[in-house]
Each structure stands twice: as C-alpha cells, then as structure tokens.
Image (cartoon, rainbow, N blue to C red; front, side, top):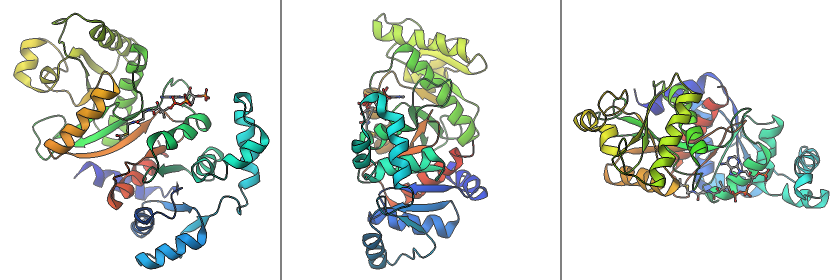
Length: 331
Ligand code: ACO
C-alpha cells in the first residue's frame, strides 16, 4: 500500500475541517469536490461566494454541501480583527491595520485555524511560500518546546532499493534558508516525528554533508557534526549519524567503507540537508531525474497544521496535502 493510500485511510477516520483560502481558484474548487466526495475532510472555501459558485458551475463541481465563507461578510470577521490585534499589537499592528489585514483570505483563514473554527489550512496554489507561511508564523506559532517550523518531503521512488521500500524523507527543502547547528538538529528531530507519525517508519537519519566522518575539514562540515551531536543529546532514542556524504548514507558497501559500525550509513531513510539550497535542489533532482513522487512540503512544528502547495500543483496534489493536514490535526 502506498504512503498516500495509508494517509487517506487515516484522514477518512477523523473528518477534520480544513480551510482552503484560495477558494475561487479552479484546482482548489475541483479538489474540494473530490475531498468531500471521498470523505477525506470537511473542506471549507474562503473567498467571494458568487465567484466561487460561478467557477464551480463552469467546472461542473457540486459545492452544495461545502461551506463558503466571505471574510468581511462573515460572523467571524470582527472577532478575528480583535484577536489578530491582540496577538500582534506589540509588533506595531494597530486596530485599523488589523481590520485591513483580516480582509486578506490567508490571514482570515489562519485566524480560523488559530481560533479553532477550522482544524487546519492548505494554500499556495496561487500564493508564494512566504505569503502563506508568514501569517502562520506570526499567528499560529510553534508547538510548545519547538524552536522552529520546518518542512519535509516524503519521496516515493519508483523502485524499492533505498530507504524504507523506496520511501525516504528529505528535509528541510522549503522553509529555513540557512539553519544554525541548533536549528538543523531541530529539523532532524521534527522530521523523525513526521517519519513515525505520517509514514509509520522507524527513522534512520543521515545528517548530510560533502564530508564523511572528518574526511574534509571546513566550517560548513563543523555545523553538521555539531547538529548531529545535538540530536544525539536531545533525542537519544533516535538513530542518527553524521556527517555523512549522500553515497555513504544510502549505499551499503560505501557506508561500511566510509563509516564502519554506523547504525545509519548505507541504510538511511531520512536525509537532512545542511541548508535550503541543497535541500530544495536535492528534492527536485530526485523528483525530476529519478521520477520520484514528491509529497509535500509537509510543515513540521506549527502549533496547528498549515501546509503549503507548489504553484505548479495539480488537483491531486491539493487533495493529498489536505489529507496530510487532516491527519496532522489529530496527532
Ligand atoms: N520557525 C518559526 N518562526 C519563524 C521561522 C521559522 N522557521 N521563520 C520566521 N519565523 C518567525 C519570526 O521570528 C517572526 O516572528 P515575529 O514576527 O512574531 O517576531 C515571524 O516568523 C515572521 O518573520 P519574518 O522575519 O517576517 O519572516 P521571514 O521574512 O523570515 O519569512 C519565511 C519566513 C517566509 C519562511 C522565509 O524564511 C522564507 O521565505 N523562506 C524560504 C521559502 C521559500 O522560498 N522556499 C522555497 C520554495 S518552496 C518549494 O520549492 C517547495
């Protein structure tokens, strides 16, 4: 059974309310129809009601059982203005500027999740990663004890030689441009959690570098060794090793040669990249050249689930990310 099939099954057991703030966008409307029909969650569309209904009619999607909310017309608007003002007044937000900000569908939907009027949010089909994440970082914040929000991709290869029957997690490929050693450790620990909770995998984490076990000396390598030590201290139950080159992490013979005795080398199923340039390029290489399915980015560390889409996403991608968000909201 594929990872996504398992996630769909989990989502169907707990129908959560997932808000889609890009409500008038065609792929989002199509996805909402499928989500409702498959029983993956209760989708809730935010946007201009007449525009959404006109588009749905053209697309032949039945929205009769799906809630549509217009921010300014809604019963929530005034409450969200005062809620947002209270949260952000120390950062210079005035009551009047809050009134303008909450007209924005993404800020409005983020306040829905913060207030418990929705269980999670999915957006990004027509907005950039920053447009979606900034409101969530400002309003929803991190889980207690978690210092940063990060993300992982579930990479499903068309063959089973690597990872866990061809499934690996890659992180961070979407959020943190240049994490410190402490932040890199946080990313690794959060990704271990995602591997367990979403993929039912026992994580074996490789902290990637261009060096294996001191083969090169450089401050960039030092960051990765330092991060590995921090993971070992903070999460002693997690199998982690580093610094490792990619071949030492994945290929048994090379792992045994370059990192003898390692519990991870040659059999890693979680790859932690040293920064966002490496992570973002790395996942796209595997997606495009190896034809892996890249599921995500899956956000990790938010106090409530919020997930981003790629602007090139398909209807299926939206449906899948909504299923992931619904599962995250019961974890
Ligand atoms: N975790 C937790 N909090 C954070 C994080 C984080 N990773 N990053 C920023 N914050 C907090 C800040 O402390 C700040 O809090 P405050 O306002 O309460 O003090 C708030 O979030 C907003 O911070 P800003 O500085 O305004 O936001 P920033 O400009 O740092 O933007 C963002 C954050 C959008 C995530 C930025 O780091 C970014 O653009 N990352 C790259 C995204 C990207 O382009 N990815 C590649 C494309 S995605 C793809 O290909 C799949």
